[in-house]
Image (cartoon, rainbow, N blue to C red; front, side):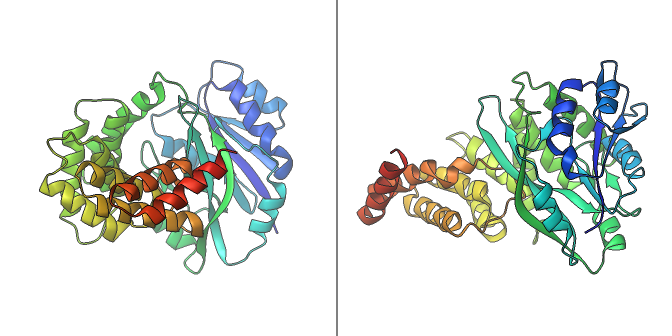
Length: 352
């Protein structure tokens, strides 16, 4: 099976760091912590929890710090968490099963982001991999391990996605302090390297999350760039399209751009739950109830099969009662009483 380290980069987060380490330390061989300049008790907490701790000054780049952290990992496998993330249950058995497979270089795990209103959304994220010196993070913020380094390290293996999940409460703060910090770093990244579709799309969505008045024109600008492509250069276009469909005012929801975005959503992102939900809402606003029904029925199909794309965040409640409400209401408006009755029965059963 091999050995495994938990790797954490942290600054000034003593309480949550303890929770993070305690949730998984019995499932790993070593905990490795990189502190980037804490002035609270973070370093002492890490050492008291049994972690091996390195200290380094913060240079304004998440990738730079994470690459320093990764260079310290000596075990066969690496599990990376942030200090504001934790497992609700001991993942030891699941991790052993995953690491016993010899045809994967790593796995996407499910992160549940707790929101300010206590709801949560889910996204699959690459956090468990075979340790290799070629793997490198890129980007000042919302960093990713580059595809080039993965290809160099593991050309004959593949990545897996599994329902092993952990919590994240970094977005629970309603003050948006974390988002404001991240948008500054993201804008700095784009000033240095403006031709990055992933970061341009991410910025557009973050403007909307922050309530920035630039959000709608920026979403429309990135959507137009995406529509000019024959294949998507980034999956973040799914987030842009969904945000644009849900945030466009009434005087723009009937536009040719929105029609093109919906068509492209079906072609590129027809297995993304959040995208299908956004199509259903937009088509309802456009008065295209047959098309809204089509989106909700496809979402129902994905929910029943359990096979759908999870690389973009979505609210899992849209696969349950929210969906049945929307599907039943839409079906009843166009005379599909068989579908409406089925949804009503589901809602009645779920409320018992």
